Image (cartoon, rainbow, N blue to C red):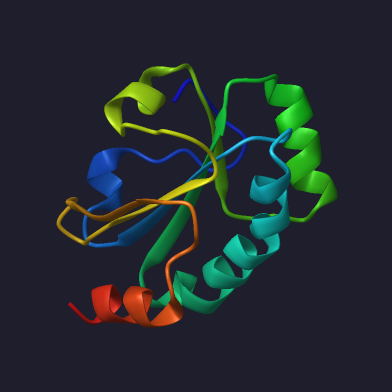
Amino acid sequence: VKKWVGTAYSLQELRGRVVLLDIWGINCRPCVAKLPKVQQLHEKFKDRGLTVIAIHMGGNLEEVGQFVRENSYNFAVGIDNGQLWKNYGVMGIPSYYLIDRSGYLVWGPEHELPSDERIEALLKQ
């Protein structure tokens, strides 16, 4: 990830938190349509240990930042330089992943968001 629109995170800082990783793009209608639900998950679980990170596939930092601000999304948003696509085996977007408190990928890639119950189960671990 080359740039952050919001708060920057290091992997070490995320240990002990469950991470919902959302791989998306502004020009992807299904991606954009699901962002309000991503925001809802962020609001519902952020104080219980969930960190949402939405990684935009390429693009212009200013354009992505403006889109995020206009829609009042307040989860972390980054822009991928192409490496994440390779590292996570992304086959299409949107793609969602869950990373447990120990830093292990435990769910995904999926094209639908995880259920509240799946997130709850990881938060209880």
